[in-house]
Image (cartoon, rainbow, N blue to C red; front, side, top):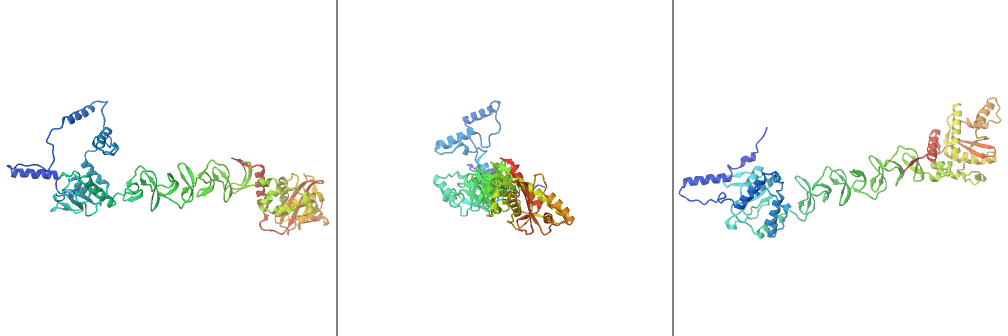
Length: 565
């Protein structure tokens, strides 16, 4: 259901001109002999000037031809007209008004009546008294004038500025500060105009009341939003960042964009904005239309070349921007990281070769193993215990028999791989006896390699370390467990206990850890050595599956890495 605007009902009867016409007609009827000088309603009494008639004819003729026909005028008026007004009415009179500052409408009174509609209903107005009625009536219809006093002919919420003979018909400054002032110059109906000095009084009054602060540039708010103001005026052309006491704000076409969250650029740099405001507390990674950027304390760090994170993961940053095309190794303060498509792949375990260097990658973290590769098995052992290489420098004469990393030495990576098969075979044999599987000791692997290298020359137990030990010499295709277990078990089962020490080591349930080694340079063929102990140390002992799995990651990293870059 529609409802009428009740403010229209507040208008006191008919429009002023109609009332004047009725009063004149009544007076003439009652006083037919009286002559009247009409000062109420202005009307033309002389014909239109020939120049105007000619111009109007010309304009109508133009509309009758396709070549000169034109439709609605531009919103600001025809350019030729505005340029002529600017030149003839202003510039030639010493007033520097440009054509783009002129708006051609259907009349100043209509504009004055319409402009009030952009202001709130609680705005208080001040008008000259007397004044042209449209200034008051349009505000009456907008609902901001209060109640009408029929006796006084005034409105309760309107500030009246007297224009009387006593003050030379010059409006007085309002005693109460209004929101809007209607200054009708020349005045209708008095015809009074104001000098430049008199107009300056009103400009000074506005500045004094702070209605327009020409010195202010920044962000301010009103009932319609938050705005960027430059030299006291909202700058609707500005897009960028603006400041006030509450912070720094994202501005789009003069207004704060409270819906903006992301990275924005401006003349002050690139910043992270959350809900329209620069978030100086934010450090992380955030996007805009140009990519994803590293943010430190709210600002893009274009000098960042690192691996940084947000809720979506860890990313490779180059020049402050996530490089989604990067595949390789990148670093931060926490270490080196394997990057796939710009992002750390925390699910990857394996080998990577990048820019000539080889890396072992565990859960995405990359460890350069260039120095480890030349050390053979010792390079692997050092990954678990960096001090392990000290076992190969005991100060004994036997030290000379180990050439770390040599192809035929027990410390070669390939020989260590073969040695792990020996531990697997040993555990299978123990399982047949219902015994617990032996764990692999990293230090016993080193001891086995040291002893086996020495025994390849001495053909005997060297007794440097306090461990149980099995030794065997034979061709490369020979399985030492054929002697250690199969042959000796048969002897044991027959009651021949003289030479079954190797078999007893294998099935000794007091042993819990082991190490194994293979040497290929003995004069007697290959040398096979296995050592045993029941003394476990935290960080040194591993299940066979875990140890062999880690070894094969390292082995494949050395011999079959994924090439990136």
